[in-house]
Image 1 (spheres, helix red, strand yellow):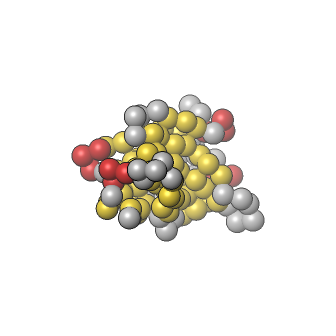
Image 2 (cartoon, rainbow, N blue to C red; image 1 turned 90 degrees about the horizontal axis):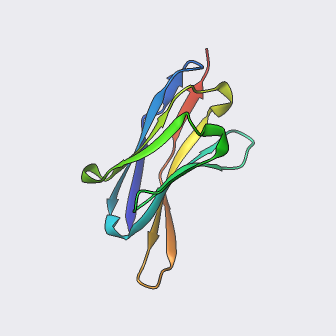
Length: 120
């Protein structure tokens, strides 16, 4: 089992920055990747960024150059640094941990989400 807890959301003005944190606990050795998703009201959940256990990162095109995902393994925490935020990026941001077992079956673990509101 893996537990996932997000933090760091809040209200920020357009053009501002926020750093989200995703702390994992439990069977962290089984985690193969951690991803950040977001979901705005009425929209589908969207993958924003991800990082593998080997440190390979991916970003959706709309955030490239503005968002950065990183890992502090000592703290079992993944960060999403978000700069130059736009009002349309207002959403609930979710952290997703992908765990892999010995049979290479994947299990998704989700946090409760953290609200990011970009507004003047």
